[in-house]
Amino acid sequence: MTIDEVLSMDEKQIFDRKSILIKPVDLSDTICAFANADGGTIAIGISDKKRRIEGVDRHTEHLNDILRTPIDFCNPTVPVTTEMVECVNSDGEPDHVLLMHVE
Image: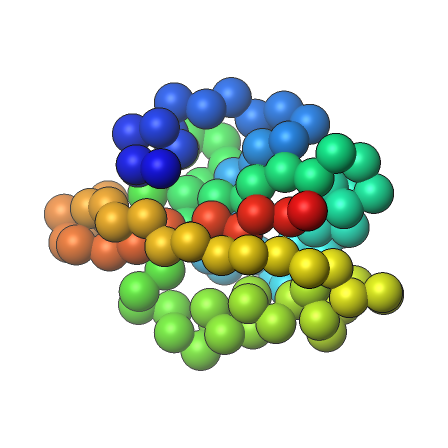
């Protein structure tokens, strides 16, 4: 998947965008909702409202917390796969957006 495809997708039952600054406990609500429905994909590193690309590369420690969310905050643990999509962030720097695919 490309960043253009991610940006063009509409938020709906199987797709959502979240800021990299989201609290893991808040992200767990979306992960659990997707897991209890038909699954879905969460694009992390894109602001919800304006689709501004924040990226995740400058937030290494917080990114690790985000990656642990399905284990630390979902009971039972939710299986997810991840994918990093290359992009240019809103500051014009090379970066990545994290896609979390929930089964």
